[in-house]
Image 1 (tube, rainbow, N blue to C red):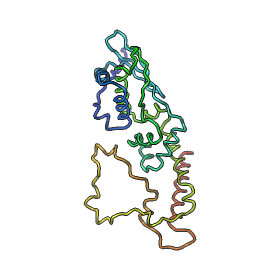
Image 2: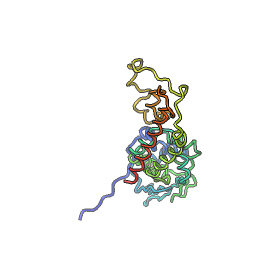
Image 3: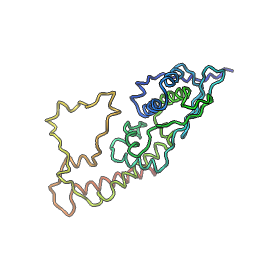
Image 4: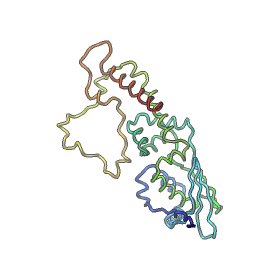
Length: 274
């Protein structure tokens, strides 16, 4: 019978590459804040040399065993703060104004500016102050913990949604909170069939005046995932068309906004129930 060989856990991704993607970059930032330079470098070397024997990631906890100079590996635990349901509700309310958030989450991606939104709510993106328990008995965050966190950053690069599990939620629950926040945010304004004021309409150049720059991006491809999202503009097409010349009991554009909102709400509800 063939003997099962455990896969070698080894850091293969450079720190520079890990810093280009969320949530891996938040783990790297946490390492920089919590470890002295000598322990950081030694921990990274351990991770690159494959000295991590096991790594388990669960809600609020990272467990690992790391070989050092001893015959047996050191076992360690790292506490990561779990956010409450109310905390995630606050974050989702902050996210509700960003149009691309739901699309990124549904595609299994973490919005790069989620860290800024969490900070706006008084929350850490990962863990500014780490609590480490290691068999080496070191009073400060040790090199073994640094090694485990480098490998955690690499794992989050491959499976970004694992981040939500660590922080006490999941993608579906967060999307539900986001939909609820958007519904509450839109309630009232759409029902009133409010018309679009001309002074609230964005200034847009005619298409023929911006053909040369139409396909150009203000950010490089490496920076695109970290670029700040533009402010959410509801019903952008209706705003582009401008105020309707038709008179009636209700402003035409405001009435269409209400219809579009109702159709979107009912379609989301049917998809959840199907």
